[in-house]
Image (cartoon, rainbow, N blue to C red):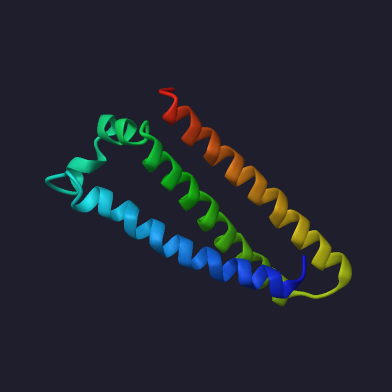
Length: 116
């Protein structure tokens, strides 16, 4: 994928991340909870993420945060050193890390949504 396309996708992910973080914090802060600490009780969190909309929001948050963070890490590593072998190794390494990160996170979201 071209670098300009990756940068545009990153900009989109930043906006998505901003919106989902606000919505996530809003669900903990003032949508049906007396206090923030009370919203972090395990049974409340698990119950909330067994609903469809919060589970989807959590998945979108996971994907956008993972892409944004790993894209930034990739850029830092590419600026650290240069060369075709290094560039390819960094790009594929970040891709593999992203697949593992999102895969493990989605596993957790799905298991929680299904009551596991």
